[in-house]
Image 1 (spheres, rainbow, N blue to C red):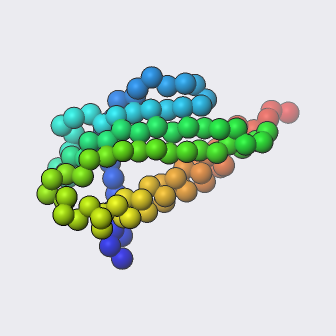
Image 2: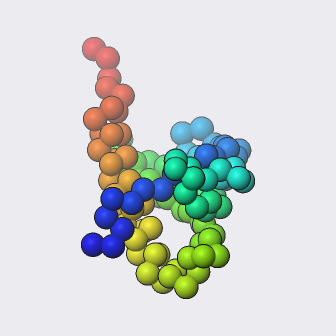
Length: 105
């Protein structure tokens, strides 16, 4: 399957956030990731919305620029990037459930 074993990484700086409800970032220009991979300028945010007393809905919005060399393959890469992000969000959900704050007795 195309994209299997791929990962995305970037160095980011935080933008103004709203505690417990919103995290925002943008990538730091010039960072190319491990092994000198391509720079992919991006920015995004996570929104956390309460969904009942013990859970929330997490919404990820991310925008990125496809590097010039990969422009001809953008339509093929988009589903791959979406799959990577979906897998990462599922991993984050498992982490959040495993590490959620528990009421103290």
